[in-house]
Length: 141
Length: 416
Image (cartoon, rainbow over all chains, first blue to last red):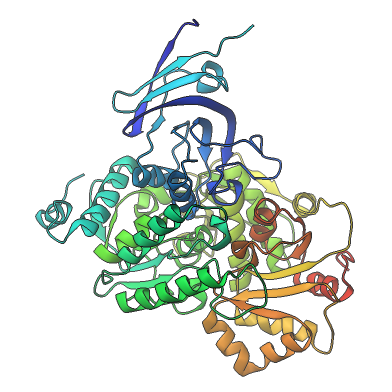
């Protein structure tokens, strides 16, 4: 069992979720770069192209806001393919709105660099009410 | 956030569950964004779309729930005195011979348009409301969806709107309120990135290139352009759309043009940074090339009117097309608002464009509709950027005259 790391931060949108981390130091527009129904990244050349966001704890620099962001999140949520939680360095107002409407927790202002501390595949508990991320690294060889 | 007694009562359900939910969205969003209060909004631009092919493969439960929410929204009247226009849809309400205009979804959108109109929403169905009569005044408080229109309203008109999403714009329309944060406040309208422009900008897509470059560099910040002449309305439209495409920009300043920025000093509120980026002729060329990556020159689509074409653009396109024929197998579509097309009909532009084999498409655009294409020529950086992922096409960004030459030849002929 790998050691668990706690990272403290600010719960922008309150709530609790857990899931497998998907980490990329990049921005992402839900409008145009994510398929609303499958939850897959469709942005050509995007570092996460082809990967499904469904149920993942999405650790990225920020979302790139578009008016369509909440709508895409809404459809993805109804289909069960929205991210479980957002962990962002910069908060984009439209993703925050989408999270509020769809009750998806969002964290920011972490006391450790998320791109150093969290890797894709790690299990992450997001407790945005308490402002804590609990990271269990994926077993490595 | 501090609420008035009346606002608290709405939050507690005095006007029913739906308006209580709308109030909760505005209050929670305001708290996240650092707002201290809700303020009166005079003008909204809301998104009320059926998802069409965006929801291809969605379950019936998803569609039913999605539509029930929109029908519920339209069962309440818009706030008295608030001008409310409607953003572009994902279908056209006209009969068109493409399978992507799903008849079931079109009917749903038509039904929704009636409900929306009864509620007080003006059924403009456009991404450029400022071209069809929604022209706010300086310092007017707005709640607009459509990132490109938001940048235009803030930067060109001097009005004030944060970037809204479906739910916040609906809530603002029904309650007549918005949380006060971001660019609604003077201190948040200060420039963050200085860009000196030395390239000659000759045509609307050149301004799109400037915006595409600057949006990427500015991220969520406020770029300030120095050294450029006053853009035309069509040029400003391209600049603003591109800024909101490559970045999360809410506003920019054009020194000498933006109403609150007569000088670069005013744009930075007296704090002009020494560091700056330069947009020169080489950067202009490279920016075009970044959206021209392709495996061949045969084309199947030429898409103009992103954001929705103005009457001047339709006039120019008609003049370029007069007496010519669009090549076999090429779809030339020009997207615009229904109001603008009404004028084009009367001025004879529609007839010329249709005689050449082109089509004026209202209410939506082919990217929203998810019309399949292999290789698209367009003059809109926004269209070019998104069409790659949303339609899966190769794109070539070009000036309008080169777009029309390509449409007639059936292949990309270069800038000419």
